[in-house]
Amino acid sequence: MKYSIVFPVVLMALALSACSKPAAVAPAATPAAAAVPGPAGPAGPAGPAGATGPTGDVGATGNTGAQGSAGDTGPTGSKGSTGATGDRGRTGVDTVIVVPAAPAPAR
Image: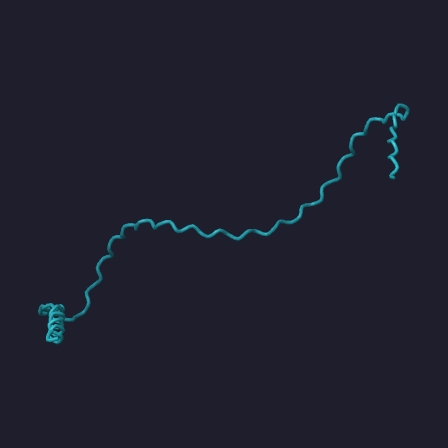
């Protein structure tokens, strides 16, 4: 109990002494002699042209465009040519007709 007040006081003293102290500021340098104002002299010759700068980076790929609309319907096709004529049919003389048997009567 006797340390309950002493301990926080010591802790506060240590915390405040650990703060950074401001750095010493060097005195400002004395200004150089000021030029006396007078009439401006003639302009000097133009300097040489500067070197060409480097090429820039390639830009990002653009977004995909929207799907196009459906095209127009094409024209109707021309009429087809007539097909080949088939072979002549056989006569009915040698045709065999098979008649199925009658079903048995239901009882």
